[in-house]
Image 1 (cartoon, rainbow over the protein chains, first blue to last red):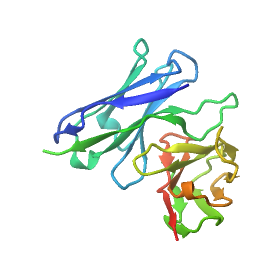
Image 2: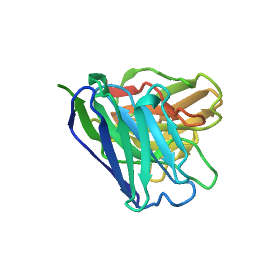
Image 3: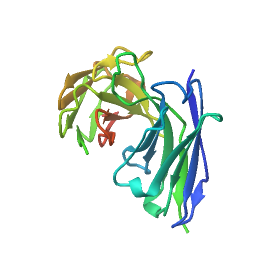
Length: 124
Length: 107
């Protein structure tokens, strides 16, 4: 069974860099088709996709945040790390990592397994 | 980026009601649409993928339809545990985008 769990600081000061780690089990990022994504949700607001990394190190970022984001993987540790520079109070959100749906038919529709989320508050 | 315009943003319904939510994509997303349920303090849960395929373990009262730009999500008979917020998503192109959400609450 696939599971994911986010870890990182609960509080970050403005202008600091946020580093979040997603530790997962039940799949490997060395296997074809596998990936891990990051999604966030400000309090009371909608979901926002941030970044995704695939088994072959192909990476995709939200255009509005691309200059501030870096996603990397450590296959030996089954971890994916997201860094976001120059944090602002508007970046206060619950950050989720998620497993992209992967079917034989290549069906779309997003993410079938999610972590529990970690709330990051940006405040001085 | 492809915009997913979801409506309504909220609705009030009673147990047993039929509930319909729509998402319109700003361009053709084929059938690469998913529908999610989110309860307060919880991660989203995938209900429907490929526009109309029920995720394993999801009750059959949930259904989805559509292709191209217009998509519909239906709960055939609303149950007490279905009061939640629902989101659509497209992943035919990057960036992946979500709809704005529909909050379903008790009338």
